[in-house]
Image 1 (cartoon, rainbow, N blue to C red):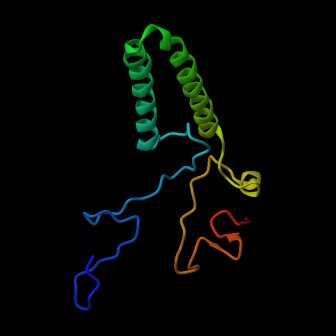
Image 2: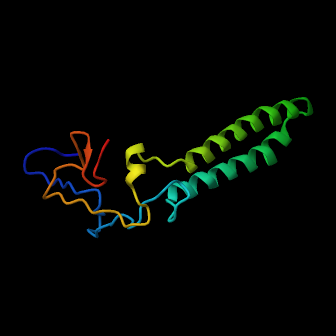
Length: 134
């Protein structure tokens, strides 16, 4: 990136795309990884997991010599099972702070942060959106 004086550099907020249109956050808070709408990264990770597991167990392991097949099924099956359990646990957890979970009503729309009042969402360990100490 050219940082010389007079060069054309533009810095835009995260909510503005290259086309200049504003991207608004979802109106309802997400409770966990199963809350709709799903993020496209979630869809990609599940598709990659299914693709890799079907390729591993349907193509790669059957091509191994007969002696190695059982060992490969046990080892990769254990790794894939462990990953699946950890992925499911991570998707089911509410990532909010404990104090936020006590006062948050997930059925209400998310508050909108006003930068004219505060410079940052969290200042001095106080969240101005949730109105709790974090």
